[in-house]
Image (cartoon, rainbow, N blue to C red):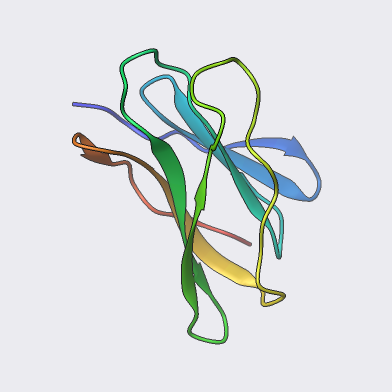
Length: 95
């Protein structure tokens, strides 16, 4: 069983984990990090205050760098890290 853990990297960003994969969100943008060389893509699943839903993919595989920041301009209310073929971690609620 994989557990998501929320940590704060600064006053404006929250980082969560799913195995060795990570997701990070500010109030309006999110990004993903693929920390496992296993051919499973990693993305952050995002819900926003205006009812929007979108996903932000790592995009560069497990090369060791975070994927790009992305957002739709609305405040992020909750997000989680997901991995293809294995599932998703717990939701983190963005303060």
